[in-house]
Length: 117
Ligand SMILES: [Zn+2]
Image (cartoon, rainbow, N blue to C red; front, side, top):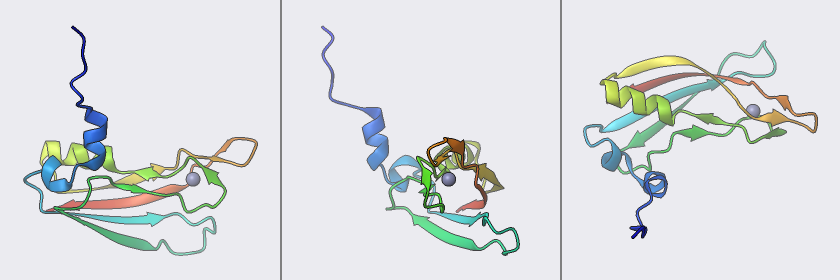
């Protein structure tokens, strides 16, 4: 009666490409500048381009070596953008990871711009 169909949404999502998930999107460009621990240094934007065949996972690791479980996940932001038909957003995310044995929050900030074409 309660047999599983074998379909698992989470698993499907993990392997979906941009064209499968967002058929109307041709390209997603992510600009990210991760805040340096040294406040003097200029933010250094890296540009990451996702095309139709790219897996639809928009995640960056935290740049701190001693950060555990951290990183920046832009996937929900891209999801919202596509749902709302927005082509440009910018904002900041804070790393949710922890540092060292004491379990301090990392909180490293990343400034981002996302362009959906
Ligand atoms: Zn971190």
